[in-house]
Length: 289
Image (cartoon, rainbow, N blue to C red):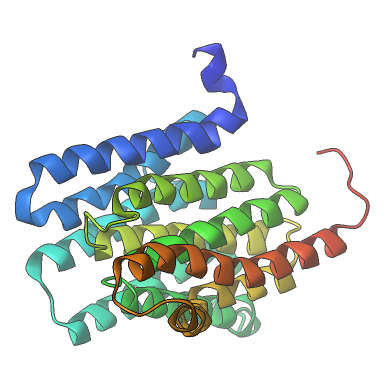
């Protein structure tokens, strides 16, 4: 491996951003009317490139939760792409999103879920499945709203990278940063003017990867549970952002369209910053890994 590729900062930021931006650009030029669906695969491509550099290729079948994350992202991207190409109706999409979210959460739990012990159904299974359902359904409602889903996933993933780092998990921190960078690479093609409509492939892949990394941080690291819980508020930042934007500029104009992702990112940064602050307090005096 080239020396510069061994740098964790390059692996978790430069590589996923560059790969996602390149794939999105090629897909936009080649995919015609289906560009919004195929270009969304840029997210999983960027994340996969970073994952391979950070952890290597995951074995099949996966042997740990870290291996499962890679396959969950790919499965979510394929599922979202299929729904995009089939132009599935909203009720079917919500049903698939809910079912897939529940199944993914339970699969990630692995040995932590013991059907012979009812206590594991209350913790950690119940809150984890509930979090997956709430966030995935919320993100699905934003899938066609320009950069909304991409921005909230990007901000939440960046905050998760810091929360995981404070929870003493360098690998989860790197992967969360890679997800944020991959989402930024796709968003590059949609700002200040939307060129590739947001599709469910990117939304499902990004959302599943975000939730899988957060779940892994909750179950297997010292990351503060309260900080991770606050991150659940980030996907709801579009409401206050919309209220604020309407008071700054006239809705529907070019200026408003260009400012919308910026205002949303600022609104999403509020709960994200609170989550990082909680993680910092919970971590106490920093110790070497």
